[in-house]
Image 1 (cartoon, rainbow, N blue to C red):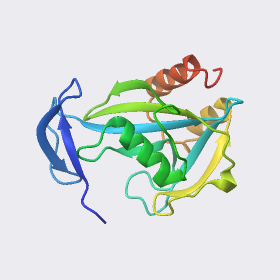
Image 2 (tube, rainbow, N blue to C red):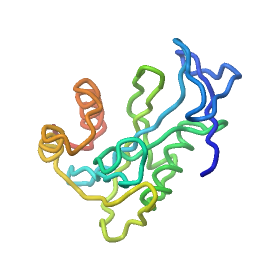
Image 3 (tube, rainbow, N blue to C red):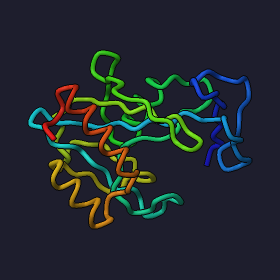
Image 4 (cartoon, rainbow, N blue to C red):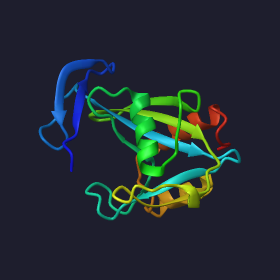
Length: 174
C-alpha cells in the first residue's frame, strides 16, 4: 500500500504548510484534512451507492458514499474526480462534477460533490480493493438502509444537508 500524505488545512481550508501521513500522528484542534464525497444522481432522481470492500479497515462491507481523502497537493475537484474514476470508473469534468456543499467535521473539511449520470451498474469498473458492489436506490430506500444500519450513518445533519443540496441542484426531490 502506498503512503498517503495529507495537507493540513486551517479551519478556512487554507494549507498550513504542514502535512501528515495517513494513520501516523494526529491532527490537533483547528487542523483539518480535506475529504470528498461524490453523490451520483440519475436523471430520474436515484442515487448510486457503493458497498465498501470487506477488506477495508474502515467501515468494511458498509454501503457508503463514493469518496476519500485528498492527497497532498490535490484540489478538492481533483480528489473528487480521481476517487470517482478510481472507485467506479466514472469520468468527470469541471462541467459535470459540481461542488454542492462543504461541511466541517471533527478533523476534516468534507466537500460534497454531485454528478448526474445514468450509468448502468453493469458498466461500472469497480475498484475491487475499495468497492464490493454498487446499486441505484431511491431516497426512501437510502433512508431505509440508514435505519437498518446497512448504509454508513454519517449523522442526521449530514443527510439533511446533503439531500437538501442535491435537491437544490436539481438532483432529487426529497
